[in-house]
Image (tube, rainbow, N blue to C red; front, side, top):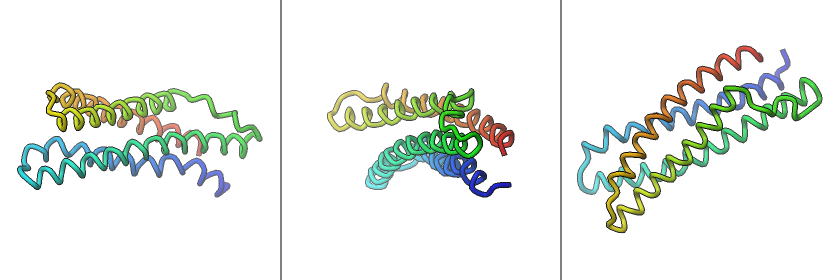
Amino acid sequence: MDYVRTAVVLAHPVAAVLVVWLFFRQRGWRGQSTLLRGEERVAAVSAHESMGDRIAIISIGIVALAFASNMARGVIDHGDATRFLVPGFHGITGIMGLSLMLYLWKLGRDTTAKKASGEPFSGTKERHGRISDLLGVLIIIHSFLGFLYMLSIL
């Protein structure tokens, strides 16, 4: 087996494992947030917000890496960078996931802004949590499809 091709194919899934781990670790905030009070809670909220920013940026990079990997695989296998550029079902769920991730990030930022300005923020916070739940399910589906897809191309 060609080592370069294998590295190209595995680049996206290996990097994606990191963001999936970070996302589910970040979701642990929902349980942890009810237990914290005072300065400890303020510090934890700040850490949660910072990590949310990082996860959103990393998610964009992971999707870009998927497209770059498919382009490189197209060149290696067929001499045509556009050969694998149109996403299949796995790719479509990835783009949906990125859209939801960016919406989740926006809701988190809106919650922070509303809280800081003294506006009611419970609705935004609730939507943020529900989108996180939905995204968690989509990530599991996307990861499973990706595993099957990876097996088919290796």
